[in-house]
Amino acid sequence: MFKLLITDKRYQWFNALLIAVSAALLCKETFIVSRLSYLQWGVYLVVFTTTFFAYLNLSFENNFANAFFNLLRKIRQNPINSFVISAAGFALLILFFVHTFQSVLICVSAALLSLIYFEAGLFSKYISIRKIYFAKTFLLAFIWSLVTVSLPVSFAGGNNLSLLAFFVFARRFLFIAALSIPFDIRDSEKDKVLGYRNFVNLIGIKKSKMLSLLLLGLFIITGMLQYKISLVDASIIVAMCASGIISAILIILYNGENKGSPVILFLTDAMLMVQFFLIIAAKALF
Image 1 (spheres, one colour):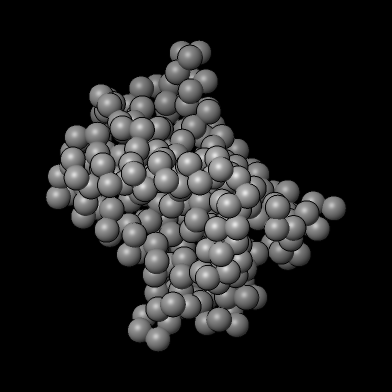
Image 2: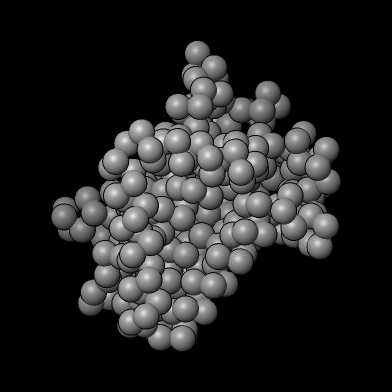
């Protein structure tokens, strides 16, 4: 029944909303773990809106026009949507005018890389990054890390070249890359037809799952190393380890031979949000 549900367009809108909220919460997580003093509300709104639209586009099979006109129809039907989109655009203008060249550079870089990744067909005549070995998974992880770590740090006046920012970026990259691999397993047949060289089509399902577990192990080790040199609180490390362990269990349970359970894939997507709430709970308890 759940498998039938995920083909429904209402679920596709819900899934895009879930991922967009997760991206905004990861920005808040960066604010917490990077010990930033202040992060403007506009950053959350811009990250939420752009992520929502990017994943909505994927839901409509990378058909930018289809997704765009469907979004316009939704906006016309609901004035709240219109307000959110307008507010996001206004916030983006404010952020561009009141911040540094570094902030603008990160925004532009993230936008260009996102277009190349999410609208692959648009650039296929000139460049197809997904056809480069392993680039699909690592590019996605890099974009997420750039948007949810480097962007908030920059707009909050932090230093992206600091050791603390490096650890936060590295952990985010490892976590996103690990969680992306089960979706590569799901999309392996389609990627093979399109010529995308993901891990599954190159090293197989079993080794891909082992690689995902290895990345989660490095994610936990990186956090512990960060704690060892006093760059993060113990409560945050407990939450990070918990999210890594839960994610590892989901990956182990994932049945790659039958392209996996849609429920497990949904829970894997939700781990981005779960990690944030684990950190909030850990800080409250400890």
